[in-house]
Length: 153
Length: 95
Image (cartoon, rainbow over the protein chains, first blue to last red):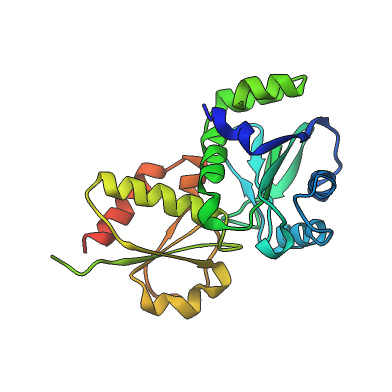
């Protein structure tokens, strides 16, 4: 299990039990947190929403609740980090590989990436986490940030 | 020994998922005794760069105009079909 992911995940950028109408609402909620915490510029939220519309980030994992990893170009990012939303009800994201296909998503990892050579560890930790159905199930059951840290801390 | 092949890793931004896929493929090929030159770019840049590479691995759809082999990289993000994708990449690198 990707216990080091918590190194990159700001506890103040974690939202549990999120009720959202659509993927844009989730992206804007998390982008607002990253902006308030100084990770991204004010232009970031719009840039992510725009990119998601043309180049989506839903990852079909074969689970009932899948994962999306929205992000955008480095120019909107001030420092690297991750925000996480665990959704109360799934929302659809389009499939990264096939934008015509909807993927029901229960976990959104919003990525702030500005230097590919320095963020390989962060990306690998995310991949390890999402490829573990047990880790995602634990995130789903988490009630507090401490519960989250126990899963991916 | 054959000339080292060049693999172009592509994704929407050229910095996020292509980085993760590049790292995963480099590690797995090393374990299979293969090395290659790696490049990364945005999906939109693939048509202009494809002529100078041997293989494209992309997490997003690539223009049909690209004539070099394209392997889907989503398997390295989801874990589903990863061994098959690695076998396909190995076969291209050994050509």
